[in-house]
Length: 360
Image (cartoon, rainbow, N blue to C red):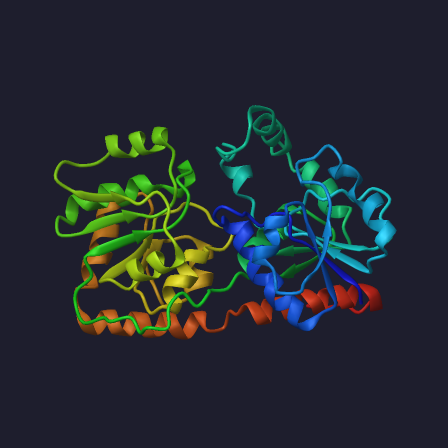
């Protein structure tokens, strides 16, 4: 099988969720399949396996994107996989697997802030109804998503009539040093964007009931959004805006007397949750279905609209017995996820398209 893997969504400055998904999955797929990686920037090769086979084409945002299949046909792939759903399929002569990670923007329609005005306008129109995405996904031969929760939502809304395969995210090995649980945690760690649906406001409000704790906001943030959040800060509480951290800094913060927190109202998976659990870090999360899937019984949950409930769950982790029991359950649950297993699922799905074998 000649597999093409679309690696054009790998960022060369810092990873977002799709970039991380692409990078980690690419590394494992290369170990088990004959794969060619599609790139649009030479710097992306730094994030791909050594000696990877590369084909450079246009950027995903290019006007040429609707005609991508006509270009790829010349290279005779058997199967092409893309980590998003926007790759052009017009005239394709191969099997195509597209990915849709979640349905966030049907619930929360604000486009990502990094998009330009025209792209933001197009994004809004795209998500006004299910029709554009249905057309895109049904042009593929199979659709990947990253969680059983999202798969069920796709099925409920009839987002596609194609076979849906779950290829989950998985935690990285951020540190080989065991996490100490000797002291009651006093650092609250949030890793993620600051889009409104992420609901960081509840975490800030929870500090009102946690005077001994510090909230660390790790991701990059625009000056405008930072000003909005600082305006919500209760008097006398402690917040650190890191505006981006390295992997080593991320691991060190998680392992420094910390609780991983998220009050998000919606997620496609929740990769920071998986990474925290894998490190043996206690987590307090919003009570939404996807976090129950990712964390199982290895986290504490609270109503995302109830800051006091969040604070109470965090305070309960002062009990060392409860803290150790929770992190043990979390580590055991997250061990079922691995990038090797996810890559195996993807390759098996690709092979099944060529043999007409149905997979589950």
